[in-house]
Length: 454
Ligand code: NDP
Image 1 (cartoon, rainbow, N blue to C red):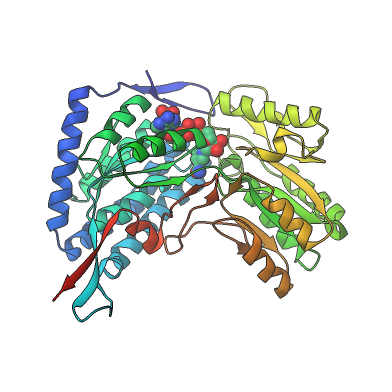
Image 2 (cartoon, protein in one colour):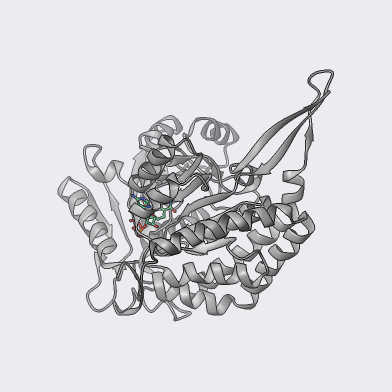
């Protein structure tokens, strides 16, 4: 039974779901193509009204949908409800802005009348992870359906009820039947679908291995891909920073979503002049976090998603310490039912250690001491990843240097990296390529047609 809802707070399997059959996959492909054709014939006004209805449903049912997220992947209920509301915000953003993003753009080029026209591609394979199980999907759904594309969703196998909920909400909002279909399929079947001529592209958020596999197949059959993969974001703090604010944001940046966020601050690169003070305050912040029942309003940190994810973090920490790292606080498995892990901080991470180069997808911060902005940027860039980054400094020269030199898809100055529907989202290096959100995300799966009329 590949698709199952297992409550990470208790370890209990709450529901299981059978994979769909080959004939159901064929039906889904037929329905996806038909829905694309129907949607393409819809006016932007009709698409806009339906997208606002999705947002209405998400807002009205945020508590119910939030509870499904918490049940399946363990984040706190308050943050799960916040995630649902963010999905609604993203849908409203595209409902209101897609028309201008899709509008013809006149270009003066030749004696002919020339312009760019944005046309949808058709059904897109959507492979998504469990960490933001609704936001990751809606940030595809909103631009895609507004553009006239449709989605075949292969969600992570531990969030099947989240997956079904998206199909249900899209249907109830009045989009054509088949516009977004939740498919309980194996990763091998993802490959078969990618090779089908009716599927016109793929978007994947997840691990490097999954991204590489999907992109290889799409490379063979010449289809566009957007990959949003791991990150090991640098979070730099320089002496001129507002230290208390930097510490407060750093604690949130590392521990939000139980540390299971691709754009979490993971490597805290602190100037030597403030290192000891930062470390002391950071430790206090970590030790104040309440770990426990994700349904309790008092809880800051719920369980990790699965037992194997928790074991993996524990192993990474153990190996880092064997390689010379020191534990500042926490970073330990919490005994008892559920997959709880105490947030922690490590320092003295050796460059020869795997922990220096790997992503740590859980609530463990790595602290580094540097002596200049140049050294900070060099260390920030000494990573295979390049997703987000943050720098805390009041010095405008340091800000400009960091914005220019950090190899990442985003640099946030004096705040933590966060996604917003109006801002492009994605990475460089092994964090992936292409952009989600903003006009770039919508146009990633458009045929940008050159039109010339003589
Ligand atoms: P995975 O990449 O394994 O899972 C993400 C999605 O990809 C799931 O739907 C998964 O399906 C699917 N998948 C896995 N392998 C393949 C494949 N070969 N072909 C097609 N689809 C595939 O991520 P994990 O959940 O295992 O997390 C591990 C790592 O992924 C993390 O350490 C982190 O680096 C990265 N990650 C990044 C996220 C981000 O937001 N950028 C979010 C989550 C993870 P199934 O569940 O059935 O295996």
